[in-house]
Amino acid sequence: MKQLTSIEYDKIFLFSGEFIHDRYWLSDSKIKIALDLLDNLYIKDENLSDMYSHKDTKYRFVSQGYQSYLTILSILATIPNGSVFLGDEPFANLDRIMAEKVYDTMEKLDGIQFILTANSQFHMNRPFQKVELVVNDIFHRNANLTFNYERFFYKDVKEKLSAFDKDSGQIANPKPIVKYRLNELVNEEENRNVEFKEIKGNNPCESIISNAEIYIIAYLNSWETGYGIIKWGISDKGRIKGVSLLKEDRDNIRKKLTERISQVKPYISQDLLHISFEEIIDDSEDIIPEVYIVEIAIEAIKKEELFSTSKGEVYMKTEGGKIKLTSYEIQQELKRRFLTQ
Image 1: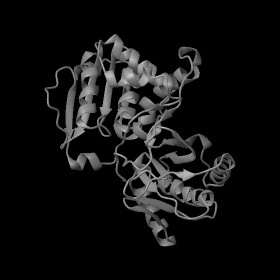
Image 2 (image 1 turned 135 degrees about the vertical axis):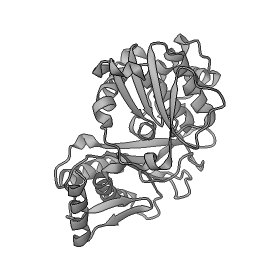
Image 3 (image 1 turned 90 degrees about the vertical axis):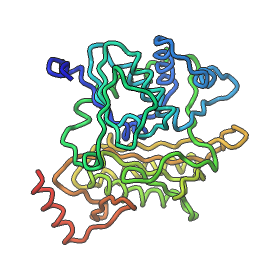
């Protein structure tokens, strides 16, 4: 901890395990730099090597555990020597085996000081040596954090990761990443940040567009969550069903949501909205044509004002969904924000 007193500002990297799972999508280039990092550290992972070297398919299927693992590795590869890496629950979306893989990698990275937090239920079957672990109790985990993740982490590291994606010369014949298999259960649960939606009507486009706007506003007004993501095509019980969408349907969703977001009051940047149509494979390992999981993510902004939809309605996110605020509730929420500034 003493090193923190003399560390340079641009060598402090703050990382949130909760946010990384849904905010930074994998690519072939990120997998490549993650594997290069393991090679440089003489860490062998046969599953990863087989996945990356497999040449028979037009895609790479990556389980959700490995998605988070590879994303964290690609981030670690961008951290320079002499840095401090502050990890806020980096194992949040990892099982014990994957958490130990990340831990082993951190232990072998010389020249970086790792300070990690974990909840009181987290246990590792080995002692921490170079890595310092701070266990949070329930009170601290639910506390309203005063630091800004984006200030320390998102901008610099995200730009580095984006640079890898743009440098197509690194990889010959890059393959798309597929992370969903039909009828499988996802290994995450709904919470204040993540919402599953199964399409049951005959008009999936309109259902997605109208509901997405409401949830986007709800997440924007609940800035304590940090970000929010809605996944259409997954049942409430977490089973992967998919949504049938033609190309014109996908284009329509992008266009209409962009239009709706432009009408949000007060104004928000389009860069805060991320729309992704994730392909699904079947039991035969084939990609199902024109069936997707639709992921719509929104980055929250900490503002004293409340955001409203294109119809002037105000929503807030709750643990079990979202609520529409009455005039009185809007006044009370604005008063609460003013008093907690």
